[in-house]
Image 1 (tube, rainbow, N blue to C red):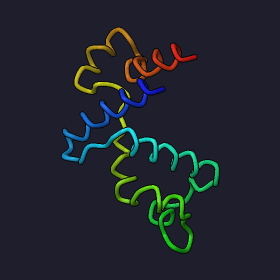
Image 2 (cartoon, rainbow, N blue to C red):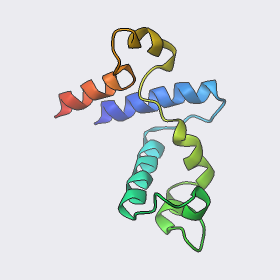
Image 3 (cartoon, one colour):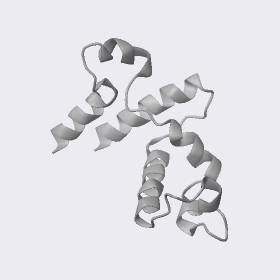
Image 4 (cartoon, rainbow, N blue to C red):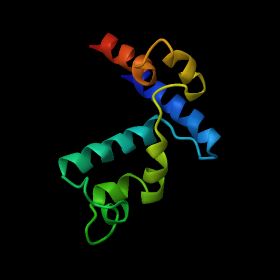
Length: 108
């Protein structure tokens, strides 16, 4: 699992540099992932970002995990190297997820 998270963080940071966004790390990414899971478990996916972090409708776990703005910015998550994607996609339509899928398969 460590390799998978490291790859996602690496490629997300590559995209972040292209968009002038502060880099993330494993711990912040895992917090982001945890919040996504909690949003699903709590059936909060239909709520707006602002509501998820509001004092009235939001949940303390989201607020404690990270700021609303940082959560929104981390939506740039990437699973592959975007700069080489088109070349890889010519032979592999699953190119965006291939590397992560292979690491996941190896772990199982």
